[in-house]
Amino acid sequence: MKRPSPSARIRAVRARVDALDDAILKALSGRRKAVLRLIREKASADRPIRDLAREEQLLTRVIKAGRAAGLEPEFVRRVYEEILEDSVRAQKRRGPDGPGTIRVAFQGIEGAYSELAARRFFTHRRGALSLLGRDAFAGAFAAVEDGEADYAILPVENTTAGSINEVYDLLSRSRLRIVGEEILPVSHCLLAPQKVPVEKIRRILSHPQALAQCMRFLSGLRNCVTEYFTDTAMAVRKVAETGDLAQAAIASEEAGKRYGLKVLRRDLADQKDNFTRFVVVAHEAPPTDPRARFKTSIVMATAHKEGALLRALNRLHEHKINLTKLESRPEPGKPFQYRFFVDFEGRTDALEVAAALAEVKRETAYLKILGSYPSRRKS
Image 1 (cartoon, rainbow, N blue to C red):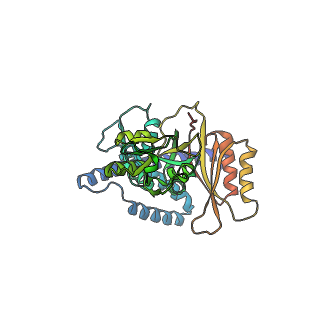
Image 2: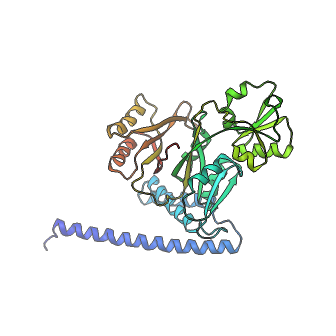
Image 3: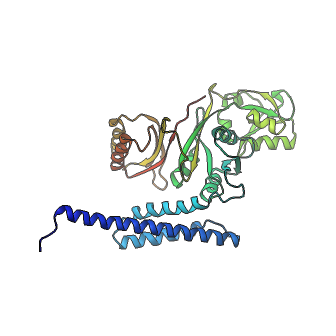
């Protein structure tokens, strides 16, 4: 019998691949329907929708099964993490606010700079805005991961005080991606219950970052101590509640108005142009204008060898990619080894960027794309 030609054999293999793809899609569709049934059952039993312990057990099981089937563990993990995220997306808009409501988590309470940034970022989005304050940055992440919010907005750096390391650490661990950014001009004010001389103030309450941005002003005060608060607006609320005329807060003028405090002094920051950059994170990016200027954020770790970082950065340079940020953070559990957070101009689906990232990946021990999103300019 005459052996089929190479073209015929290729067509036969492609037909087999197409059939397997169809089977995969049918299985994914069936899985999603089963998940939606599970969500309804959990809701009727008043049980939490998301079970992180169960997800970890699932990942452990499928990675083990995949390894037995000859599949790379990291490949199986990436595939199933996306499947799990799809399950979350299938139910995340089933909250009490109703369809069309944009639910945004932030760290702090009403009047916090993060709340102001959220209102600024989502001002042109369709739908009502529901803002969900959380005690900590991790809580804002968790609200999105658990389906309680669609987005979280978090500060990552300030032009006076520098980067907010806790947020960068959360970004590197989370499965959420950066889908946008906001640049907020920050004008710190000294706020008190009544108009009193600044010399009468003996205690100033605020967030550590806000205090760090106003060191020149604070160092000029006598017999005055500072006290850290989780959020600038929380500090304002505390001062308003106590009514102590020897106590003041550093926060925005908007926060002072919301809690009935008076402005004793404006523009306290050490630098005249004081801006905070916020990132917006979500499970998936909303539709964007393809004509927008994009920025991509990554985190990577290089081998602990001479020239390893330079070789990775050279791959970006060779593709004429412009870096806008490069910062190192200690690698957890690995003394004197570092992760590098990098921002650069361009989007991941551009040919030059995709090619550069493929080469950078070969030069690194670890590479994660945190997000590719429209960049914002100071205004």
